[in-house]
Image (cartoon, rainbow, N blue to C red; front, side, top):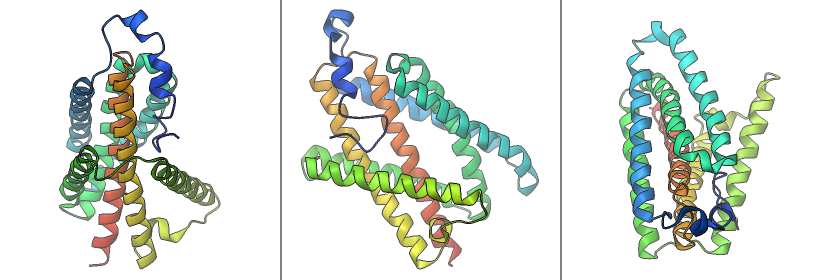
Length: 251
């Protein structure tokens, strides 16, 4: 069974671990190393976000923000795909991804903050609060990544992805699924469900990273595991931003 995170799957660490000791000596993946690298990537995300946020100076600067947002989104996607298919490059591509994705996050966050003052800090706080709570629940054994749990989260994640893709295609023809972006009761319920699904992906990520440590995957997989966690945290943050904006638009 694979993680719901496309960057992590059943064979991610097992494949990398084959021949790890022969190629890398004692340089193997550790939990502390992955945690440290995750922290470093989050700092780089913050640096990128601070840069694009600083470029925002009210509605008049919106045209200048669009290239940062689109460039960050496209650049982040390209770097993410490179990292997924070239895991040995993760020590270089993961930090670059964090910086570029940070530029995207800073730009889109500034736009949300302009319309809903205070929303960004709420979303950031909730993101790290949820991540900390789920990590505690996972480490304590309160939530276990059983096969049924994994199957449910993977299926739900795939369903959300298909809905988003269908909505994007419909947008090319002037139509959309109103509940995805709308602030109706159904729209809020949908965003709440997606937030839960994104959060539960963290449990699968914790489990897969722990598996990598147990099979003594090569050292560069610390960067890959950190990258995968940041991908999920970014998704969770964006979904929380969307949910909070829907709730505030009804006030």
